[in-house]
Image (cartoon, rainbow, N blue to C red; front, top):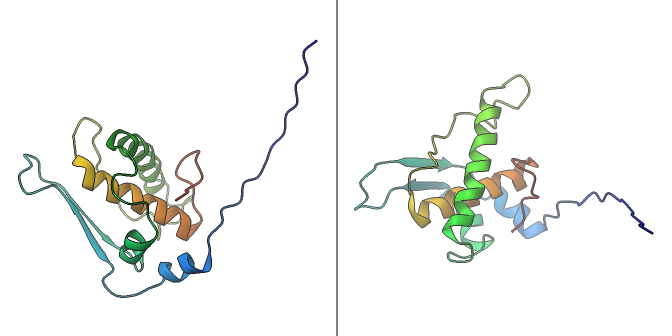
Length: 139
């Protein structure tokens, strides 16, 4: 005899008061994500987002917590969804999705770039209650 049960659960995104305060913290809010000095390729992302740098330093998981392959896999998914939303300003808020991100899956951007980009996506999703993939943006 085979018995099956299906249930759905709506998992709520929980953001505590400390994190909410960091979302709006001003000052030192520009983060540069760039290739290392000795890298062959040149690339750069500038994140100008109030609170992101503070959030990165105090809420995000520390460097080394995730593997580079994990970060690359998630970043590919997040970038794909981000860029699709940039192209659909009548569906998605154009004030949130301003410009596309050029992230090539065959380029090794290194750990630091992937770490900061991944954490920006987590920060963005949590702050603006967005989902750029099938996963809840957990810390």
